[in-house]
Image (cartoon, rainbow, N blue to C red; front, top):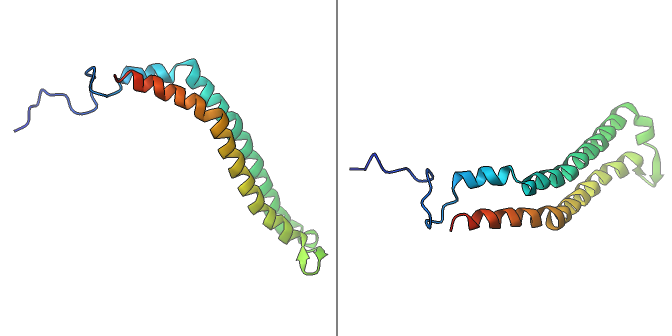
Length: 123
């Protein structure tokens, strides 16, 4: 038989249990560090996403609306369409590399500081 008066896991906070109190999450969310974390993340993610989306749509539109241009031979049977299509892969890998570098150098240090503060509130 279970005790109906005992708090369920994750509700309330008992000091020394290793649980982070819910109010600590609210404080962290409203902290200047968290606002900076969101700003730094969004400052990279949104422009990069928009740039890649525009590049992708341009490629698709060129493929459908400018077939003569895209079929222009560059070397042998390699045409502009093939080169631009392969560049889609190159830009995907480049963006991934830039994202990892950005996260490691700019975002992760801020996130680590916030995490340490939250974990400190659990002790």
